[in-house]
Length: 508
Ligand code: BES
Ligand code: MN
Ligand code: ZN
Image 1 (cartoon, rainbow, N blue to C red):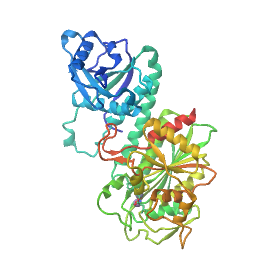
Image 2: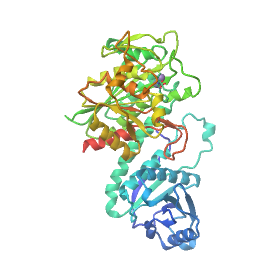
Image 3: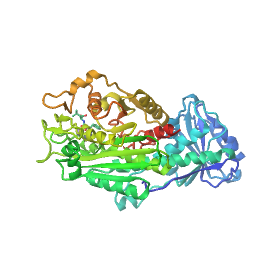
Image 4: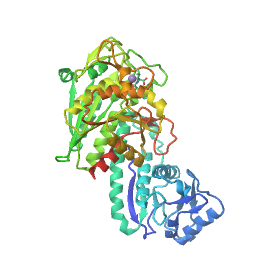
């Protein structure tokens, strides 16, 4: 969990005299204040109109301006924070997520403890004021996240100021409903924070064993059942994909199973997440540059943890099994070699051409294990291929699978929550590329269509009869650019909000 809690609530806009340090008022492009400004006391309205007339603020996206309000105007607050909304027609939920995060950051810099945002009265072309609030709150919580636990006390001695409270002012009759949504958003973003925390931990502090321990801790706090398969049990189940990837490391691999069953006799959703706690490539060693980024190679597993945390906190009436194969991919005298052939739990023989294509090896056993829970839908998330980063960059997750209706639902969920997914085809012809001379299949399919041939490999471990979707999150799992206000540098926690949206839509 991020250390500072940012509290949010919905308040009655009729009570304009609430105690707060700053009122947040949006300014549309062309210096036009949000209509809700009229809810403010005369003095505040006057100050804002004056500032806009004087051209202090254009209303461009990302723009912000603090206006001090003098005592004579008898305002309930000391300052007004004007934030640029950009062109009215271009406003989307994603703009409000960014806005929420920007508000938090601006308040942090300026020593604001409590801010209040006015949301009603305006008409948003694409969104209801409820969705505007949801998106702003989501962005604020996402943007408020910090990963600071590895910074020494001395760095913490001069702590930065943090915003403590952000309230949203809405008409009295909307408060109850809006509070419910806010509560849901909070539970979802807490799941995202958990996924980020796990993914941000480096390889020495998050080994497969430690991840298993985190799973057990989850089971203590929430209605989740945790099962860990390791050592002899993995061997007995024939999970040689997981064992082979882990055999080069002193930190042994395991398979983590998280079960949440509050859906009675409803069908089961299985979510499978790759958790290579560090991917050096193994004997097929990766080049040194940026190798440290491979601490994020367990982001799929982290998303599964975050998703289960969120749905358990939301108490959703659904059945979900989370399956997380965890291993560390290192080169050593005990590591697997290129050319090795392994028999997977399903019985398929795999020739390991490249030990750096390890994700599909552990997922093979995990996907096979998922079937034992007889799910009607299987969704896997994996930082699987560098080729996906080349194909889609960081703005969309790769989507593949065997079921178009499922893909459609995931695309819709992604569009709604801002975690977009984009399809790539799994035409039968691509399967040719992973044919092996000595075994059934090989773990690489050559240079062409690397993301697709990786998914082809996975498809061999899923029954045709089950709806399956594969999400390649290699390009979306972490962001070291710091260019998005609601995504601090490091792990994005990608997939948690997507899966939550999907699950919430399915439940209806
Ligand atoms: N974990 C990597 C993929 C990856 C690359 C994730 C960049 C995030 C950013 C994966 O295990 C891997 O090494 N894939 C290889 C496959 C190849 C050997 C067929 C790759 O993409 O180069
Ligand atoms: Mn690899
Ligand atoms: Zn990997």
